[in-house]
Image (cartoon, rainbow, N blue to C red; front, top):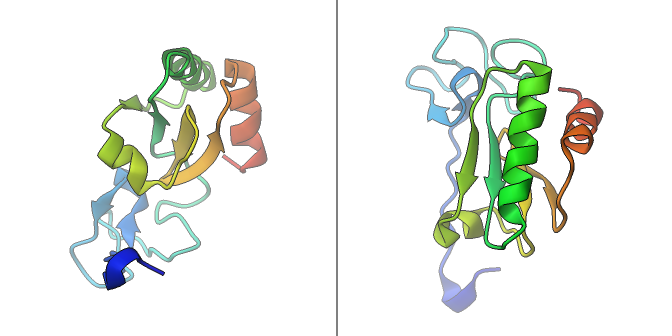
Amino acid sequence: MSLFGKKKEVNEKPMCACNGDVPTYEAENSCCCGESNTQTENCCGGNTVTSIKVLAGCKSCHEQYENAKKAVEELGLGIEVEYITDMEKVMTYGVMSMPAIVVNEKVVSMGKVLKSAEVIKLLGKLGY
């Protein structure tokens, strides 16, 4: 339920998993790489980490960012970890405690600083 009777707009179009949050431009179940894209499956096959974001708003958040970067480097993922401090963007994820980690646009951790080994373990549990 929304405040003051305003409905929250939701983007119903599937997103291209091979390029993070780039919308698809072709048919509804098509990906920018030409592969099939559904809500439950990555268009480029398998569970692939396409983006990692650290939502920040506290002193210890920078430590979380550094730990996430180290984990990405150790795993050889070749992606950039984003450090988001804009509170409007942070609020779009519905996170109430910082720091938070977002993987492929899904909040996977919040409220505590994870060491790089814990980030690696978390990604393993998620199937990435």
